[in-house]
Image (cartoon, rainbow, N blue to C red; front, side, top):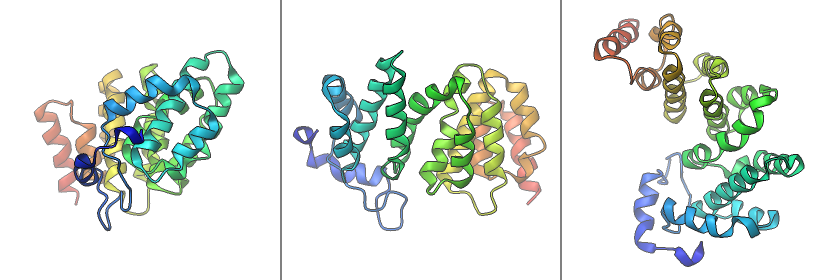
Length: 235
C-alpha cells in the first residue's frame, strides 16, 4: 500500500471524506490511494496476509491501509466457506476493531459482506444493540447497513425494525445515519414497494427530512411530493 501512495491525491481525499476540523472524519490521514488500486493490492495479497499483519493495517493512521485490512478480511471470510473457526475469527476480529472502522466507506464496504453473511442463519440481536447503543456513529451505521445482506436474500423485517430504533432516537440524528437508514429503507422497498409505502405513511410526518428523502427516492414524483408534504406540514 505504501508503495502506491500518491501525494497529489491526498488533499482531494481529505476533503471528500470530511477530515477538516469539526467534521466527521477529523484527523484522518491519507496516502492518496484510490479504491481500485487498494482492491488490486488486496487481490494480490489476501491469501498470504496473516492476522498479525491485519492488526498492523487496521491500526494504521492511514485510511487506505485500514480499508485494505477490511477488504482483505472480507476476502479471507468469503473464501473460508466451510471453515467455521476461521470465519468466526474474522467476525471476532471485525467486532473487536470497530474503533478503527471510522468512516462511512469503511463501514459500507465491509459490514454486510462480513456480519451480514455471518448472521444470515443466526441471531441478529447484535445489530439492534449496535444501532441503539453503538459508541460511535460508525457502530450505529454498521447496525443498519449490515441488513443489506438480508435484503438481498429477501429478508426485510430487520431493516424496518432497526430503522424504527433510529426514528425513536431522543437526539437529532447525524446526517450520515439519516442517509444510511433512508438508503436501506429504499433498498427494502425494491423488494416490496407497497410495504415501504405502508411503513412510511404513519411515520413520514416525524421522520428526519434527509432520511425520508432517501427512502422515497424511487417513488413517483407525485408520491415523493405527497410524503414530503406530510412531513413539512407537520412541523
